[in-house]
Length: 141
Image (cartoon, rainbow, N blue to C red; front, side, top):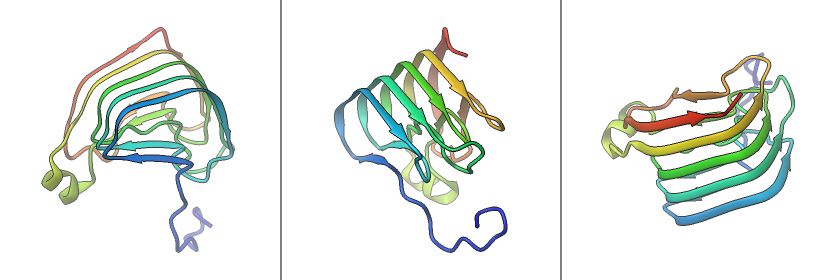
């Protein structure tokens, strides 16, 4: 339905945190997400580790983790097989991102393995109107 234009509703996230602090996501598996799998929005002090995310390939918009207007994020020691980006760092869409004006910042990604047939392991955007500051990716493939 997505590819032929007949999709009329958005698909849900598996996990979404909004306006939260001190989030720990550790040691579990998520299968077959219909959309962005983990979506922290306007949140801080987030640690995601030892995760396995397995989504259908190819399947549009099935990103692994999408930190959005969030700060102090660590994503580590995990494996993502997705139909889209493994990690997509976001900070708002067009005028909404400009108005909210909260960048994603201080994001550290370590020891992450991503398998995706058509997208990035780690990307900045596409929705990033609020800005992105200080992102590090090490020992990942």
